[in-house]
Length: 111
Image (cartoon, rainbow, N blue to C red; front, side, top):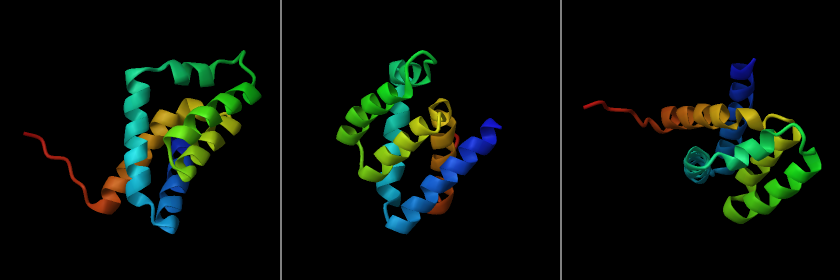
């Protein structure tokens, strides 16, 4: 189920980036967001907390995301909050980054 969620939302973000010509911007923002949540997982804990009401999560998310990210990426993150899918944000963005690397023909070399 989790793989289906990350694929569905990751594909949606990928298609949005192609439609709007914002591949580079969304690719960089997704990588940046993953770095941030890996460094400090307090935001993810807050968004996943079952006792915090969705309205509070949306209000907090909007305050944070709108200041730091493009309208498209912030809106994408807000949709994950609205649909109670923020717990899958890491897997979703990793899937999106993988698709984008494939699209841009970015490979990985091991030395």
